[in-house]
Amino acid sequence: MEAQTRSSSGWLEPDISPGTLTELCKKLGAKGVQVEELMSADTETLDFISPVFGFTFLVHYTPNKYHKDDMVVVGGDIYFANQLVNNACSTQAILSILLNCDDMLDIGDDLRSFRDSTKEYSPLLKGSAIRDDSNIRSAHNSLAKHQDTVDEAAKSSDTDEDTMFHYVSYVPVSGYIWELDGLKRGPGRIAPLADKSWLDVAGPELQRKMELYSKSRINFTLLAVIKSRELVYEDRLRSKRRLKLAIETKLDTLDTEWRSKCNFDQWEEEFHFTISEIQKQYQSDTMSKPTRDVIEDLAVLGNSPDPSKIEGWSVPSSTPSSLRTKEEQAFQENMAYVAESHDPRLMIDMWLQIQEDCVRLHEAIAQEEEKMTNRQRESSLRHRPYSEFINAFLAKLHQQGHLHRMLSQPFPTE
Image 1 (cartoon, rainbow, N blue to C red):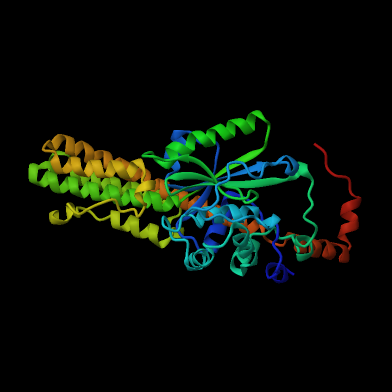
Image 2 (cartoon, helix red, strand yellow):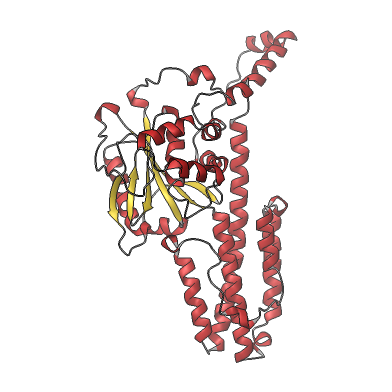
């Protein structure tokens, strides 16, 4: 039954959560992204989750009161498709972000080919192409609730207005923030970026909408499509290591006795002991290979770089400049400071601070790895055919004469 459901030509109702939407991104072919729910769009929150590729609001709405043509701008470089499949609302929202970020992240060969072959289509034809694409439909249906069937997917799309929800996405393209609502005629141009970060412009707009929805008692959820936190933390670890080695090289030229003065060997020993304890705590044997490689790379004692290579060091992340985070900007500034500084005491203080930062990043990677493992486990449990097991279990109890006896007994009370 499950195989027939999954291979159906219909679009099934998906099981929506940040975890399943992250899995959807992977199944669509996008690499290095995840979806997170946000409780706020304030500066602190957005700085913490950056880089962000796009946002999407899940909002309760009433069809007969929906304004379909507000702020519509037709044309431009934005990829916009009309939504033609009711059950594909969440998938359409994710696609609206991924298909406008192909120059910022790896969306995979299939999505890239789909975008290139349909980018000149009208919004309506793009919507038709999404509806008819078997790869997109297969990725969507793989996350469907297990109890859904082909017959359910083919039922009338008429739904009680009180239970209807809709996704609206927001992305930065060609110097503007755009609102992508598949139920409208075209994309909406929200605000120019000018010389600002797109999060600095998007944050107040998102906060305004959240406050408006709350005051109007409209149920909503704000989701962000962001760079994988594991990759973010791994990038930061590499940056810290590069900065640490640059400081060590500079200190070697300023004071050849600095290692003995600051108890270098003791600090390194304590650092690696702490890292090993973190790995044990979070069961590091389940870590992905990239995570293990980063940890092993950072665990090399006394590994100083070739000084001639220091000048060429830059931010290890491939994040485009338009999405560059404050952490990455700080890395460049610190590298420049190290190159110009002649104060050994300040260099040693920076070195000790980096040791502490690396410990926190190791723990953050382990926590993120554990979170993703738990998400996958929860998703697997939600999609198991429990009804088949329950039916078989009850049938066996009945055959053996236990069911009648169990049902005839009074339920225990406290």
